[in-house]
Image (cartoon, rainbow, N blue to C red; front, top):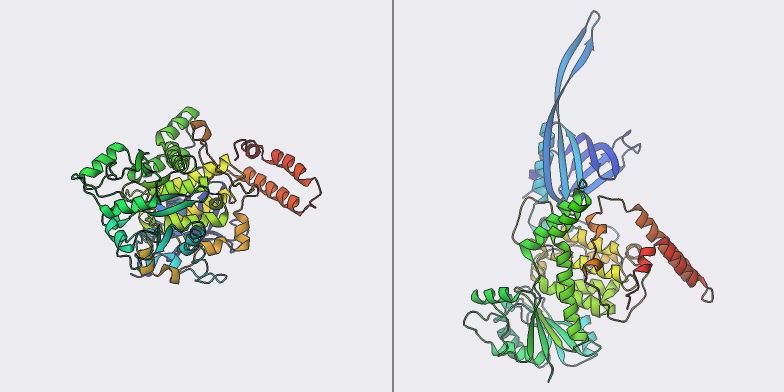
Length: 579
């Protein structure tokens, strides 16, 4: 396929762009294989040739169009008379609803031009071939293709564990992806379990996702594992190798908890379809706990309802609160945080090992294991540690990004595989940052950037559904890494939290309804201005920087905190529960 075949009209003059918060801009609209470009004209906003819009077409979620016929009389003069001539024209309006929740409106003169731009944008935004996407064409001069891809290797994570205990080993049994197509080539498993046992245990788990180590808790030596559901089936099949693997993870006389992200009823129904959960008789040292979390279509519908409510500015207070509640989004946030807290409590307070799984083990399982690590581990709350966590627990662990984020909240297509699980994770992390504003080294801005690049990006980090697919597409050889860009000094500084202070303690969030809030920085981002909040954060950054530059013996820190309280009182007041 050639991109030129999809572009019916490449350039249109006198196009007017409108979107919330800014005055309309008139200029020349150009459409390329991956971008919509609009350059302002002289007299538009007074800046000739300034590019006002550079929109990645992959970011377009829905295209809505309408055409209005116009007519007027034009008077022409001759030597002896005036003559009125009726002139007919048309004006088309295209509304572009983007995956980052922005809504743009283009007014295009001419019916044919309007329809052509709309159809071309729809076709280009829905190109499904990974290797035709923009990351394979993006070549910034300041970066090299190899940069960033090896920043967080599993080998380094394993070496940290090996320095604490010899009970675990790095297995490369899945080097050719024949055991499990959604696992990375290397995984961490009990040292006493050989690769033959892993292969047989994989055949007993859905998709071959046998139990592997997700996190080692240095404080007490407990571990967190993740997997998919066992294929027990209605006949209650057993797998001795799987039982040996889970027994070896307990390391002697320990005990463990299985956190199932499905309800007990859903797990029972899954058994009738060939799946199920671990029976106590076969796994006597493991206790099963159910913490049902929504995924798939229900979660996608919740996201859509929330965005609809946020975009409707005509709602009364009562109606707005009713729509917010009926979307159930904050209920999903509470459920995810509750499941993660339970997992963390099992390890921290009960000193027990944990196995987390749902059905496939690629969605809510990763949501819980990743959140639990942010709660437990201060290293995962640093900028570098958080990026490493995303690499291990989402990207390499086989979360199907290509399937889950093909569309956002506006698309008229309703595909069964779409679900904003990763967005739910980012929202939960934002809630943690709001409740513990000193404990996360990164700011809300990083979470917003991650949300945007999940759905549409010029980097290859979130492409494909698994490490196997990324290798087949040569993503790491032919695209740039998002981490390389984020870790450039100029960018890194933008995403740091100026209030951060290292906190070695576990952070236990409140999940009470009054403690959870709507993530306004995301869901109301294009609806209400963030000018004053941005100014407050800029002032905080200035005060912190001036405090760091002050002599150690000065009393600048005391003064700084009183000034911070005045600059952003809600942040300081919210630190009462800080660990």
